[in-house]
Image 1 (cartoon, helix red, strand yellow):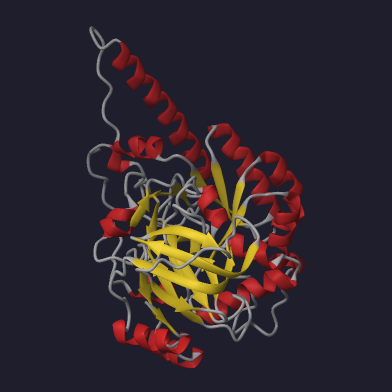
Image 2 (image 1 turned 30 degrees about the vertical axis):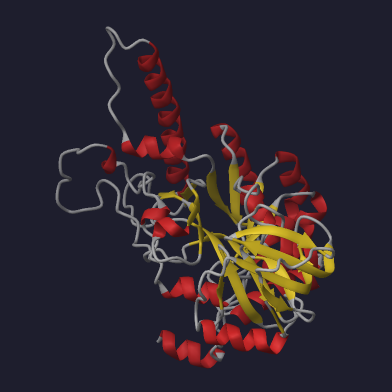
Length: 434
């Protein structure tokens, strides 16, 4: 079937206000296709069949059984991916207080759950709520996918790559586990590990314990007769199950220290935050660490003390943070973007535009929101770019992605079409949050 652009838009509106029916075959024809894995393709067609990309290119012909969208003015991107998010997850609770924080004597030890601020066994995909408003808001912003992580505690839990659509969490999950989310905050502790030094020492000890636990289990499995079996440790099991760890590092010195700390653990590591990464980009490239850059750029407080003087380093960070992605790209560091709390589509595009204005190539910015995240998490073989055989997650816009006037027309997630609701003005959104 073939219909004009106007008819296609009207048909889409009639089919769904949020999600359309699962159309077995879709052809988006004569569009500008940003593959992320190769050059931009002009006047090209993308064919989607049964939730997967079947073909893409300027010489591709729409199948006879396809629902065809004539799209000469549209741009097709791989579905945008937030590289570190809590979309769809319950709000994080304050970290549990450590031993000695309570006035009453602590209860008898009950096992691994008594490790302070450690829930390493928690899996993000078990917590995802498909109907959470953040999932819908992210989809409206053009995101089809997110690497979601629990964030409560020092060892917060294991992340999962999820598609931002589906009736059940199982339908949303693409890959798991992605890694273990760590924070280094000593909040809530009145005794060990109640300082940054204490938290780092605690993290070191957990990884030492995990390696010893793994060796003990392996030795017992190889020769159990006459040996005492190791006690099951849920917290260490969660650490060992995680293929990589995520460590916070905003400042240049933090990025160096966390890279050195990760080298002790001998595990793949992702550093998140990275606003001061331009200062140490060559070092990060040499180390091989992957970096997630927060799109919530540092900014001046809304109601600052008029008599307070801000430190020069804070002013410099605020000025130079948007240049970090360009510096990382130039140095050859693998990096991806995450929203970092920015919600409105216009604000997200504006944040990326700041990085572009500070020297980041536009297609490199597209990559940082798509394929780079998939590569960092080891799932680029089935998502992140527009290539045959990959999951049909697509973001379709009426102009170049980072232009101020550009609108998200619709997204495809697993080949199902979703249309974003009209974006509310910023003032209205602020009032709704109140």
